[in-house]
Length: 123
Image 1 (tube, one colour):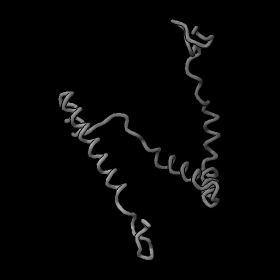
Image 2 (cartoon, rainbow, N blue to C red):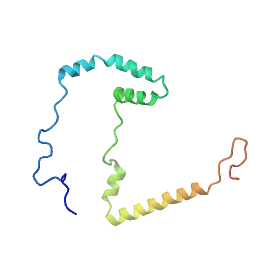
Image 3 (cartoon, rainbow, N blue to C red):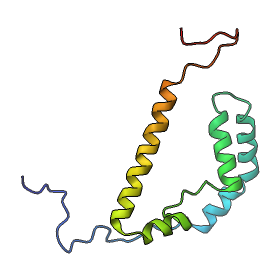
């Protein structure tokens, strides 16, 4: 199958103009004058069930920052695993998988919890 016309060619610059220009300072300053009314509007949206989650998400994200998901493992457990030879890491992984499978099997074989009237829910 041949290359399509959208395939990059060797040495081709994909973004010749570079990064797009930043927001001009005067536009940024003008937008910032609307901060309090915008926060008030988000606060009002919290009272509307259709807008509540979105408004709360925005308020929390800008008030406290968005949650950060770590991109690398840290801690002594990971360091200990990485210090092991590859065959020991593989054995450890197999034992963890077997343990997880046993826990899953145990959960699926337990009877249903009792219902409100005190009878078992399994039939």
